[in-house]
Each structure stands twice: as structure tokens, then as C-alpha cells.
Amino acid sequence: MMNPLKTLRAQLLAAALLAPAALLGNAGMAQAQTIDLLVNHNAVPASAQGPAGGDFSYVASVILNSGTQATGIQLTQKLPVDVTLNSITFDPVGDNSCDISPPVEITADNQTITCSLDDITGENNGIATSFNVTIPTVNTNWTATASATSNEADSDTTNNLDLERNITTVAAADLGITLNGPADPVMQFTPFDYVAVVTNNGPSPLPGPARVTFTVPTGTSVSSAGGDGWTCSPAGGIAGTLLTCTHAGPVPDGTTLPNLVFPTTATSSGEIDAVASVRGFEADGSTEFPDAVDSNNTANVGIVIDEDSQVDVGIVKTVSPDKVDKSLAIN
Image 1: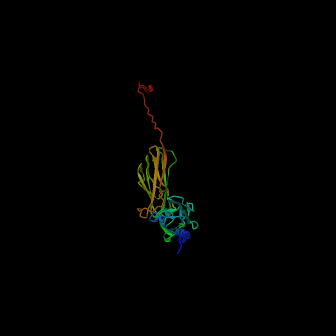
Image 2 (image 1 turned 60 degrees about the vertical axis):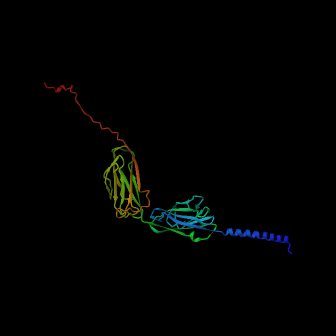
Image 3 (image 1 turned 90 degrees about the vertical axis):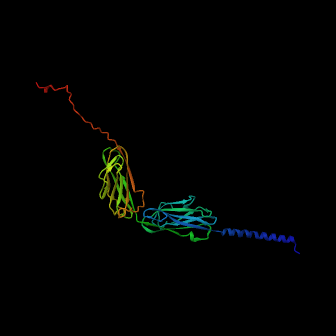
């Protein structure tokens, strides 16, 4: 008959021998756990289309689709050659970083960018990285790719590697305007000129007319506005009058149009502000042509008018009746 004490000892010994193996097995299972890292690759604007010469963003959002935590995340963004990278931003900001310093023109040598992202904890949480770029010319294939990896094994690499985003650019003319006035101060009632200069900065020719609007400033009047190739309606007016001046198209890329002159007289003293704006149009003259840069479509200038201190003095001669020249007396 087996000794019960010996049997118990044998069972305890077997359990002690099996315990380390079980612990190692659990550790191996923990190491083998996988996650699913997801990359959404979007564009701003959401239409992924806009005027050439404008600013756009490729936005790579790295999301923990399943699992408890992703660590050591590396985002690889490949931008199209010839764009200008203006900035890189993160949401949330955190301690994320990339191996390139904007602003910089993208070439074949630097188009692949690696970013180290913070750990992501919890399903459906993530980090959005925005690459803001200026796209210089017209093209239908400004394509970027985004990939993300982590220290953990990924159960589905079809949703986090080489995700493409394409942006299409259309023809556009960046019209810019400057407005110049006389040196300060100007004497009240002294004629002077405001001069507007319009340039097509491209990248495309403007097919139709360029149109400038100018509101006659407070305390002034304008007469006979115009310039070589410019027609204005009306050509002048008192303060508050809106003048619309047109130069026929097409206007080639890189062309500066002749000066547009507004002959002006100040009727009051003080500080006077003048503003002029420009827009470009299709050949039909009524449909606006795309312009990627709005910030240079309006210009203003301020001048100081000094009050005219001259006094108009007149002299009137009178003769007192009690003083008579006796030499003219008649006897």
C-alpha cells in the first residue's frame, strides 16, 4: 500500500517543477500579443483639390484600432517632389518629432520623412500629423504615402502601410496689388496721385480681365482715374464713391500691368486711408479665376493732410467825405 505522505510529497514536487514552465509560458503568450495600428491618410481641404500655388495639408492619423497600447511608433511620410513643406503639426502636441526642419523645398533626397510619435494607449485613440505644403503647379497627381509601425506585432498591415493620398491642383493666377501715395505731409487742396500696381504672380496666365476697385477716401475727391490699358467707371467722384477699373486680358504669368493712377485732391485735413483690391476673371469677364493667395489681393496706404493756413487778404480803399483836396475846388 502506497504511503500517503510519500504521495503528497511527490505531488508537491511535481507542482514545483511545473510552475516555472507555466510562468514562462504565460510570459511568452504576453510577448506574442498583437495590436492593430491603423493609418487614415487625408487631405485639407477635404476635396483634395484647389488652385495651384496654394497651401494644402496631408494629414496622417495613426490610430490604435485594437489592443491596449502601441509603443515606439514610427510614422513614415513620403511627400511629392517639388512641393514646399511649410510646417508639421501634431494633435495632440505631446513629445512627437520629425527628422526634417520646415520650411524646406522637397526633393528626391529629403522626400521621405520619419517621425517618432508618443505611445498610444487605449483603442480608438491616436495622433494626427499634418504636413502643410505649398503646391507650385497644375497637376492631377500630387501623391503622398504614409506608413506607421510600432514595437508590437501588427495583426493587419494592410491598413497601416503605404496609404496614398492624392491632391489635384487646377490653373490659378495669383494676382497681387500694391498701392502707393505721396510722401507725408500733403497740403490741403494740393493735388496728388494714388498709384496702384497689379502683378500676375502665376503660376498660370490670367485668361480674362483684371479688375481693381477703389473707394474714394473720406475728405478727398478723385478725377480722371486710369492708365495705359485701364478703363474706370466712374472715372472719379467725391468721398465714398466706388471706382471700378478694368484691364483687358489675357495677362501672362509674371506680367506687371501698367500703373493705375487715381488723381486726388484732399478737401479736409487729418489722416486719410485709401484701399484698393484686385480680382482676376475668366475670358467671359464675369466668372472669377482661381487665385491661390488672397493675402495680397488688397493693399492700403495712409497719408497725412496738413491744413491750409494761408489767408486770403483783400484791400478796400475808401475816402472820408470831410477830407477834400482843395486843389480840385471850383470857384
